[in-house]
Length: 234
Image (cartoon, rainbow, N blue to C red; front, side):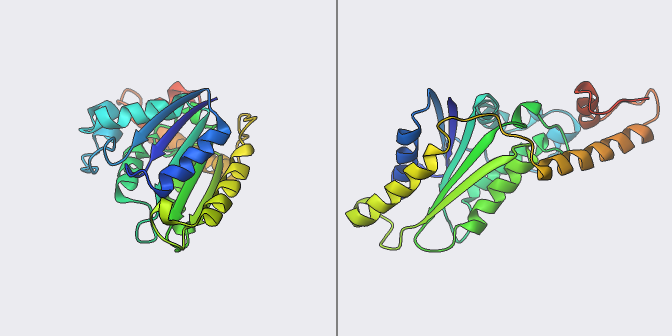
């Protein structure tokens, strides 16, 4: 199994330890890891070059492309990050912003359609659900149908070694049990949600195709849909 991990922090604390236990249980054949903010792109400037021309012209392409290619090649995509003010860290969101060009509404990559993704989060005690939502939404719009989530409330503190052994043992049992469901990973079936989003965007691109006069240069998005055989230009 090939895994890619996007770590939402460079600190080797609670999130890191939970992720390491998960990987120890999973034992992937091949592992690629990125650590944010070190490996994260700068904030999106809104230049729209990725949409109107090519993602290769993005001023942050050199940072984004290795992460995107690793996601395309992986069997399992893992996002592991701490909760900041009830949400995902800003550098995680910055990466997601740059992946918008590959959403269903623009230029989706069919290699994402049968992938599985995992979101691992932890907080001092605040709910994890809202902090997981941005990443799950982005993954769904990238075409990932199977997204599994797990969150932890540390409660006793933010330093891993200062948390009681009993509580750390409880966390380990929980995340090892969670990891075991991915031992025999099979390609994910397309969910009703991603099928609906795809069809909605297909209708949009088909309409744009009909409105684009013969001989006029097609948008990169529409050309992508035609090249993949999802839209037939008559």
